[in-house]
Amino acid sequence: MRVYLRVAWLSCRRYATYRAATVAGAFTNTIFGFIRAYVLLAVWHARPHLGGYDATDTVTYCFLGQSLIMVLAIFGGELDLAERVRTGAIGIDLYRPVDFQAWWYAGDLGRGGYQVLVRGLPPFLVGALVFKLRLPQSPTLWLAFAVAVVLALSVSFALRYLVAMTTFWLVDNRGLETLSGVAALFFSGMLLPLVMFPGWLEPTARALPWAAMVQVPADVFLGKHSGVGLVGALAAQAAWALVLLLIGRLVTQLASRRLAISGG
Amino acid sequence: MVEALRCYALVAAAWTRAAAQYRLSLCLMILATLLITGLDFVEILIVFANTGRLGGFTVAEVGFLYGVAATCLGVADLLIGSIERLGDRIRDGSFDAMLLRPAPALALAAADQFSVRRLGKLVQSVGVLGWSLSAVDVEWTPPRAGLLLLMLASGTVIFLAVFVIGAAFQFVAPGGRETMNAFTYGGGYLTQFPLGIYARHVIQLVTFVIPLGFINWYPALHLLGKPDPLHLPSATHYLSPAAAAVLMVVASAAWAAGLRRYRSTGS
Image (cartoon, rainbow over all chains, first blue to last red):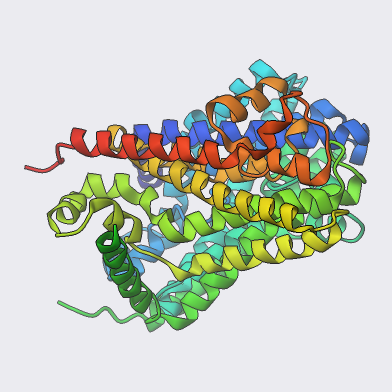
């Protein structure tokens, strides 16, 4: 266990070295937060109670989304795994006396934890200076939100891990990575809250794993779930994380069996 | 100038041949780019599934704003989008190699990693623009069509200038690549909606400071016959070429200043 904590901590430290990029990224997330907030407000001006959200809910949702965008690596990537398979450095990783998938998982949790602070807080705080935003009203809700974000990150990691592992077969997986980023952007509720999706699209999107990434944590944050419903929402997230991580283990076994490293 | 364009074309062609080596991946990338930009328009459609009008504009009218902004951004991005990687080039020292070559650095940096996958963007934007031209309630007389062409040309130049200014900024802050995205992609996103939905100071900002409003908003007010929330004189509708020219001068000054200031990173 200690080795994984160490991996998470070092990954955290590693991302802390890219300071200028962090400031630039947080700035861009904040700008997009503002533009989206005005668009959503214009919609809510016409439809004040759309999908059970009021205007404050939707602006809060918008800035939460911008805060989570890098934490959850919505656009995909943020794992060196694919690049290391391409270059062959993966041979060293497989040789380490640790669990391969858990090693990358720990690293990604460390990355996410760091980005909560530097990419998560700034857009939300700046947004709160200009707009009225809603905060969770009880310590329980804050705790539930923290759990929801960890589970969201787990689902996100499990999906990105699967995409990265395809490099064993595809060599260049960037096309697939971009496609999977598109799916995540749309179905997670990052682009627009899923409550705005018309007709059958909303239940469909909610039934897919990506909903566990933005829509569910945001609903927890806004206090849309309570009691059994809250436990159910978190359990559904956990179930997706577990299933996807298990598929990842299976793929890992298949991949390591067919691996041949060139060079010497 | 001709020499710069020739160098640009040579480098761009080389990168295209390189990308064509992984054909499946290239096809998936073009498809993915088409989908990603398509998503912007899906977003507009979902907004209009919930409301008939956004800031007083119908879906066809917003489609027109989107079509123009996205086409201009698409052309600019296809031509010199790679320049946003300048900071990475400065950091790893490969920009020095560009400076040593007998060709203008701007042409080389712009053609660096030129990627045809960006065509995916353009195809989608032009498609939406084409649809919106017939869907909006406008009679396309020759003067109006002329204004449309003028706005497309000016909008593209404005985005080209924003790309160059963003790249020049990376001479000062090599890690600042994402700041640039706030103005390029952020600018494209901002202008795809009617500016009337934003706060007054936001509209003033993109009119008087960063002239993104001249990409599509002011000419579109005239073409679509909409009121101006800032009540500026109607001559503003025709000022896009002037705004583009001013921004171009600023961009070339910024690039020259950045290049002068550049002292390399290596030994």
